[in-house]
Image (tube, rainbow, N blue to C red):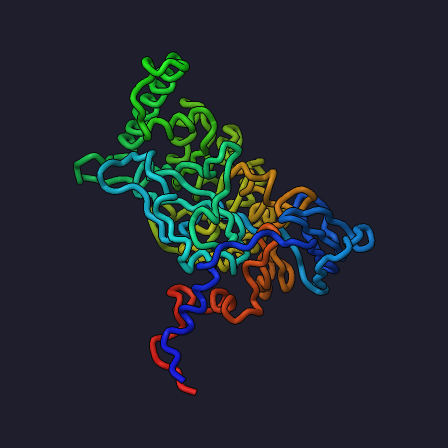
Length: 435
């Protein structure tokens, strides 16, 4: 029998169907070693899930399984919250173009392919919440998007909605080498000083736009013409949209902190490669750091001082610290390794596990829903074969809002966890198979 590309269609099927509703009957997960995050480890525990939420959690015997529940025995397994990736590029996204260095009106929402196999790889890595960002080749490359990796046919199936119905997300800014065009002319900056001045200029305009809106009140005759770019920056000024600021060198980090203080916003410092050099200043500013932990040198010169000790230094200084993949820089399937390497370099186990979960949730302002296992929070969790910091541990299952979205025991899912070409291209081979 000829099976040309049959696997491709089969593997695409889960994304082509609309996400199933949360389980109709209660789900009980029993006998796992539970790492709830923010609470003591439960050596042999039970979690009750109903309607996509954690209904109860506790040691075996302290939680009574409800009648009619589906029961899952996780003896010998580890259960912990789904991972939160604060900086990723899954979904084949693109942001601003070459027409200007600052484009706040551009939205990742309008350029994200949820059928991309990169989202499946993220599920295979235990990631349940992700901040999808445009690139860093601009001073401001657009609005980011916070997604739940529920599965589905369209981007709407993945959105996290705010109370007013808008999709949750931040805004992506950058400084340093990526956004420079030395000697190139045109609208892009050629120096770090010019980069900062262009950003300052746009925020001054945003302040003026905000003030005009406030003076106009409800009078449409007095309101300025609608400006999508300024609207996005006003959201930053009013604390309704978080700035995720790509920055590496210590001097670039301090420039970010100066701009943030001048215009009254608190950025999340993304990468923050040399944050270990200015940890006290970062702590004083109250700025969180989302760092990447990689075990191979290379890349850009401004990241040459990357240190595995960054997490430990930031922890000691009292800085809220999370990890991210910057996928592909770190493959989403290997996200757990970030915590393991940080612990090896001196970070505490507790803070390293928080950096994969609740710390990132706080940076995305989603910690009331995700990042830890507690009654009332979303039932986002992963089942591990062993300790999360062990190189031998595998993500066996990933659940989002009480629904299993990845199962290593399923052949189709397994490809995304362990495969190469097929995992990233949605097909297993070019040749025919004959039986």
